[in-house]
Amino acid sequence: MDSAAGPPPLQLNRGDNGRTALGTTRVANQVVASIAALAALDVGGVHAMYHPGAQPLERITRRAHAYRGVRVDFVENALRLDVYIVVEAGLNVQSIGSEVQRRVVDAVDRMLDLSVAEVNIFVSEVVFA
Image 1 (cartoon, one colour):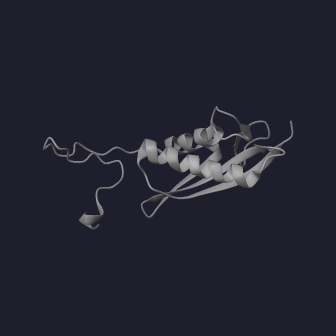
Image 2 (cartoon, rainbow, N blue to C red):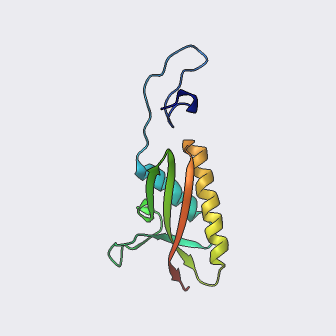
């Protein structure tokens, strides 16, 4: 690994006080997925997260276990997120998807300072109210 590339993400670095690193901080994929799911659920028009492969009654989740609607991969020092959402009928799906992407990247960057390579949005269901 090239030392000019900097320390790995979320590793405690040598601070201005001259102390050496005390260790590393690791974040579970479930935590990253939860942050992404909560950011997605804050977008207007996103009704819920979609959990592919779940039982019919558990397939759509609003808050509890919302992270199940997000797949997290760490590839080449960057995150790749697949976000499965349920949208409300009658709204512009393209706009909702773009806003979900923007908010997910912002939330992950702000909270974890990790690089996000991709946020893929899958509209898996439409809810008619």
